[in-house]
Structures are given as C-alpha cells and as structure tokens.
Length: 92
Image (tube, rainbow, N blue to C red; front, side, top):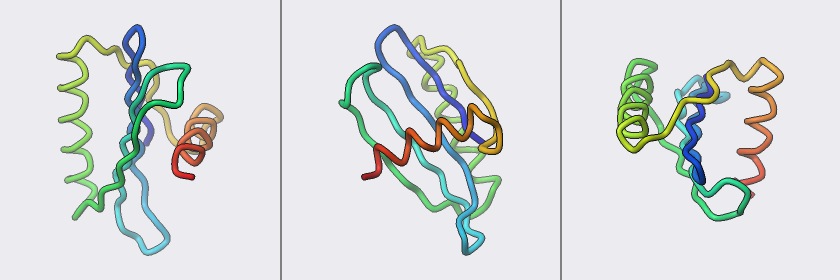
C-alpha cells in the first residue's frame, strides 16, 4: 500500500509492504516538492495491524497539518510502481 499527502510545498509518502522474509516494512519519506530536501525512514512492524496503526497515525498528523491525500494505491498499479521508483532514488 502506498499513500501520499501533499501541502503547497511539502509531501509525505508512506509505503507498507512485505519484504522477502515476510516481515512488514513501514517506509516514510518526506520532503519539499521539487527539491532533494527531505528524509526517509524504514521501520519493521510487528504485524500488518501495527503498520496500519502507524499509517493511521501519520494520516491524522498530516491532516492536522493541512496536508491532503493525493494518492492511495497498491504497488502493483502504474502509480504505485512510479512511487516505489521514486522511493528507491531517495534510498541511494
């Protein structure tokens, strides 16, 4: 699952997925739109439910900060594949 929020100048993107060992990984990327300023954080969740709880927390925080959800998709969709590709650029 991939969810992206944006404000006028900033973005937050969350990617929840399973790794090759079956563990749930919660990835959060953030930054300024159109720049390379930002960050990336990976967290290992104890379960899918915990990852979804973290996603709900991020959604609540971003909404309270005036961000709007602009994308919610699976990584199998064209938009999802593009978002994962952008995350891989941040990771390098």
